Length: 126
Image (tube, rainbow, N blue to C red; front, side, top):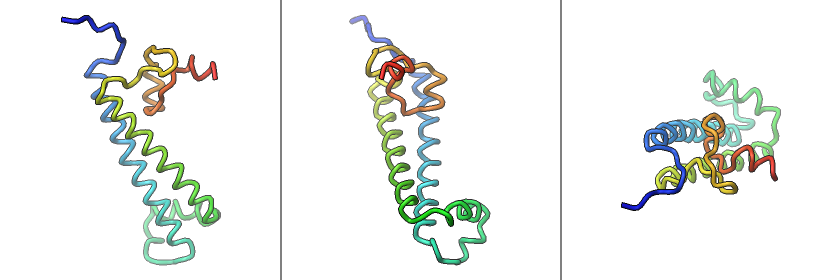
């Protein structure tokens, strides 16, 4: 039996991170839909305006131009892609390992930024 010399999070930890990431992906996809619907309904006073979540979102977006809504959507899509890449790292058990130092990224950092690939130490070196 080969001894694993790589440091990694336990399967239990990985499962917890996976649940957190899936939750974040669902929320991010929901937010993306809101951004897109605000983009599509910029000057349309349809029935969506009566929905409290849409109304709250729309109040902020009414000030925004289509360009900034589009930029928001692109940024949100990148965030979702980064989260999905984090799920792939969980599957291959490389999640939470800093790509510069090779050390474990602090759990608190991963809870706040679950798609992080750099430890604070590596981030500060940049």
